[in-house]
Image (cartoon, rainbow, N blue to C red; front, top):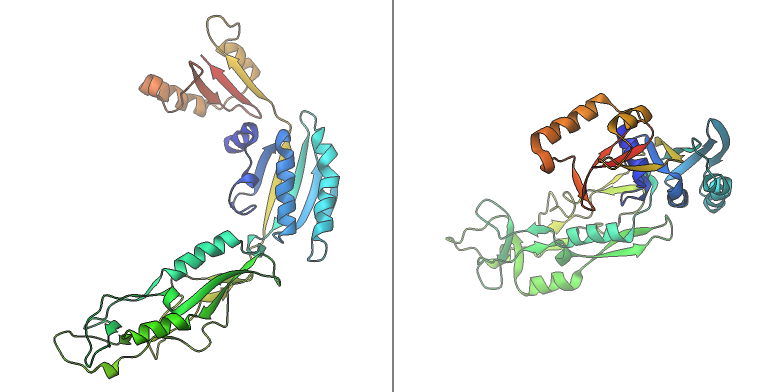
Length: 336
């Protein structure tokens, strides 16, 4: 077991409890401790219910207990079955025993949440689509008078489209939907804020050459739903033929990304030992009880020798200096 896995297991932390989607990390092994098994199982159940997890093989030590195959019509059943299979086993896990979940998952199958779509909505609403026109760049101009005049007005995504985040009753989760913001586009046109391919303030150009901003036909047809991926940078681009027309969302089909992970629940203990003049335990005694990697010990020694009490490996806890060491299979906190 490597240091990273021991640290995760013994600190009581679990990758599955992070803010990222279940199993979003590229690693294939996750280790958590028996006392946190309920949270681990809960996260697995969430993955089953939201469609991320398609299969779970449950193992006790080296023996396979069951294989759960999850489909669209049995998510609730499989979620309950998983808990019933392991709840008692994990609650009474003995020293040295493990329960391993071999998980097949695809994070692209997870429905969009309201929070992540609200974030995309804000980005799209505040995206600058057109800036004031220049001699070489098309953009906004003031066409309210007889001749074109300069303007400082910019056109944003929210000026062309109403963007909403709605519950997706078909795919689950939420979807992002567009409708034309006709009221705002009319307001801009009435105020004379229009589009031109170029503008030179030193020359006179009739206002009739400017075009009112509008959404391209069909721009609101497709929304962002499960199975599609959005490119914010490419969305709401000017049409290639009529640059005053705004295109819709830049969407592509989401590419499946099936992966496998082993979620291992262990029964591990945390040991804290004081090493000082009043304690019978010594570094020699500990060395006999635990096997440490020589390279890690060397690095800690060099850190202490170079920086003393300011060493990065040193932490002051309760008036004592503490170094955390990771022997094979256990965690040892020594204070002295």
